[in-house]
Length: 115
Image (cartoon, rainbow, N blue to C red):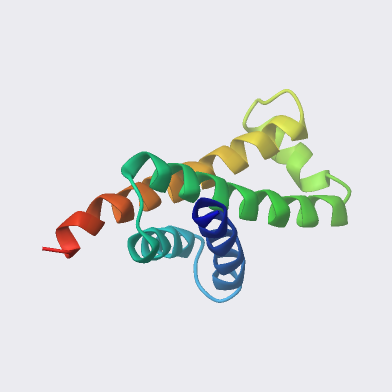
């Protein structure tokens, strides 16, 4: 239950922070949430990956559906991807990786903080 709460908290806070701060601020959110809520390194990575990935998926789909997939289709051509769906997968994976590494760092720093 704590793990699911951590994922949801990372996703909601990341979405809120992206309206004000730059794109990399989601890493700071994942880091702080996993540092405060604790957990092991692997679970911290997975929570950050799923939380930020979910956030970026929802935001990217909202923007993509609003403009009828025009921008994502053009970006897919630019990156030589087969279709706009693959571009969305790559986008979510990159966001998830950023959040996962930040969450992992926060989870691994927790034992050092307690000393």
